[in-house]
Image (cartoon, rainbow, N blue to C red; front, side):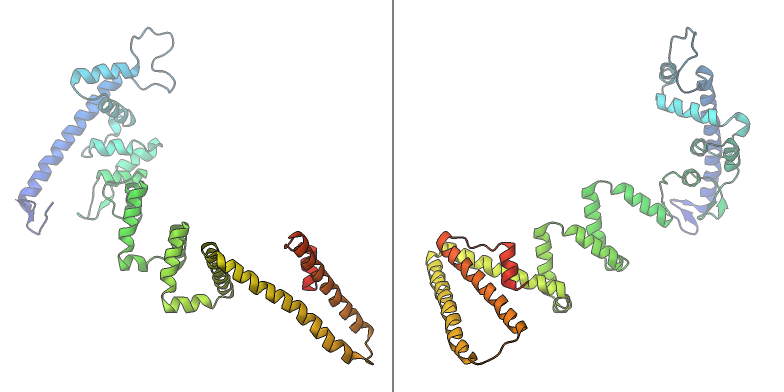
Length: 336
């Protein structure tokens, strides 16, 4: 509706007021007619306790639904409309109905359980912010009984309306995407909430990798991230694992690499044994005449035990192909 100072829509303000006055009179007439129709439906089928449509022992031929359906068919309306009239008329006895208040408002306020509260509610019209007057509207009545309004005004009402419209996951995803593209919207999202959203969106490993890669391309982010000891350790471990994986792929593609590595590792192994023997051959003769304390002798013996264990492990690996370390041997080699 287009509304300016002197006009509403396509009519002058004066003509608009005349139309409103006439419309209010018609609404009152309509409300009286609807209540009358509801009273008729109540006469045909009075409200009964839940659990049965007719009293026990009667010979009534029709249930409540059947009776109301016949009445609805005969006057040319839906049965649900008749049931609506009947329910509202029952909730609002004739002496409690408010003249000038629409049937629709009475129907909405009919859900107020306590009768005294219901009678009082209809006399306490809310303030209409547009007109500055106290008057009933369907949304005003819905606010009284806690129903969802058709035209949300408050923040809570707007949030509730959006929640209703975005119950479908695809719609919600599209709306969220569009909203987060608005800078002023994202500014109001707390850091904790942003982190939670990012975590949810990156549960998929492929997405997480892509996002992480993009983020670490930002120098400030990369520097700050690598200051964390745990992160730095995991990155280094990942680099080591990637190198090992790449080396394994090269071995699979180029069989000659395995032979080269075998030769290098064999040379290192023989060289280690030779180096150990050569070192002992050089050091032991120099110790002639030296006195060792009990602690020093015990320390050397512990190291010799590690040497023997390592030598036995190497010999077993050569003879039986057993290259793994059990827990006890691992602890012994570590000196634990």
